[in-house]
Amino acid sequence: MVNTFEQLEEQIKGCKKCKLCNNRNNIVLDDGNRNAKVMFIGEGPGADEDAQGKPFVGKAGKLMNQAFKGIGIKREDVYITNIVKCRPPMNRNPEKDEADACLDYLRAQVLLVKPKIIVLLGNVALKTILGSEYGITNTRGKWMEKKDILYLPTFHPAALLRDETKKIYFWNDLKELKKRMENL
Ligand code: URA
Ligand code: SF4
Image 1 (cartoon, rainbow, N blue to C red):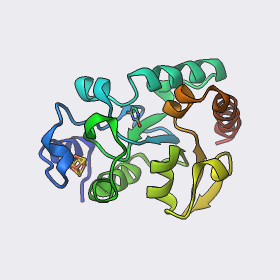
Image 2: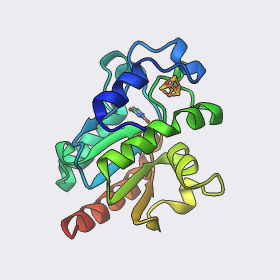
Image 3: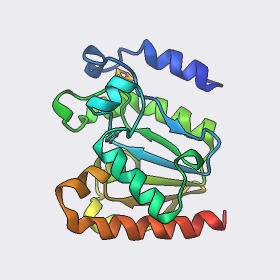
Image 4: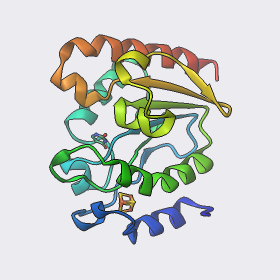
């Protein structure tokens, strides 16, 4: 049990619970506001994130920032993290054993931040948090409540880079999020 972010960060820095520890340059814990009402969960660090020790600072992050700006969401007002805290090699998806090994840290983050809304970015976050029976194409945009937290699954911003037609859905989901944020 950790009581502070400092303790959590120390634990993760020394973590060898899965094989992703072998190639990391930096752990990637979080960015944004640790008291936010809204938490975003991505997949795992890429090369830029691993180099800088911060989530969503590469191409996908820049696209997310653009969407935030257009919709009026401030990065400083939300909390941003990932399923795994160390970079998977070749930017592959985290494997189930890696996601499972890392999940206690995410649980600690949720206890510390106490978000009212959690945005699940893409299939890895969706399946790890809500269950492998879900798929992002069918579930995105559908709000779900579990243990007093509202979940919003949406596309991962990297998916928008591969397929432009997904942008409008991501955009609409964030607009809906913005409306709900105003009433929190
Ligand atoms: N993709 C993610 O899922 N997380 C990051 O931090 C960056 C890219
Ligand atoms: Fe530990 Fe998570 Fe890094 Fe694996 S990904 S070594 S569980 S911090």
